[in-house]
Length: 368
Image 1 (tube, one colour):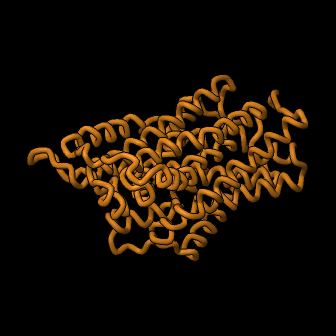
Image 2: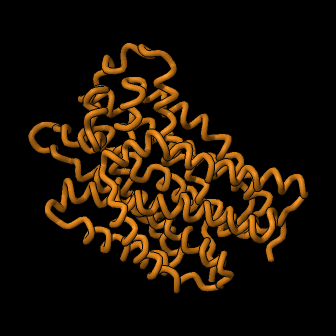
């Protein structure tokens, strides 16, 4: 049943962190550095600050409608047809697009570094099969699974950061703001579009929290932890690879991991960062797909969402294969288009809903 599963605040926090880190941790340092050069770490800080008002809007919507998803209160606030239009724009204009692009990201990485020679279509099918199974098991199940594996991921990330200490060169950061503030602003835009403002997806998951108190604080803490991880990875890539090395590498975080050598017995530990990246990206995909399926079920006013999982998964794989984005296209899309596209669908639309809801004094403070 849609909306009947419940997760704890701790599980919610982990989902928000992994969702925002996701595939961004492996390739976004490169895209940001293309714009901001060695000041990319400042762009990350700016992106976190500029996206925070959107996070506040999401929290206020969740506070005003604690037991309804975005699809449900869109119709309640804006009327049946305009509300459905807003929901369709959000679900297919952003969420479905992000599923396809993230699926391509993980498929491209795996076929480039691990499954060399494997048709990327086969990787799509295997990954989507796992995502469909996870969604059919439900939000509660994959949230608990995430809670179980997170200690392992923490150990992996902590080991990675410790291992890179001998490779750090602080002179790689100098001079700061050599080209002024303009490139820093330009570098922040791709990160706003992906992944930070995409936290709007959790407007579909807030009703599944088992308590309404402290939702906002949990959401904010998770957002800043994810932002801090993105900041650490970006500045680490620059400190180790330099601005040129980060900019010219498609997966700079993975490149940093390949350089780690401690004595003659600890080396080539890129599998550690790859494991963290794969798990976080897979969790991001599950969340996006779950939100898409739940949203469609709500639009269709169907109580069971599971019948939609298989056909929608087949459609996602087909669309990803048809659009067949290259890495160069994806980088250009992230830099020039996605941030504005995401700003409209993930900030402007929720903001309109919130303003109209306050004007009409609409709320849903009691569970149905």
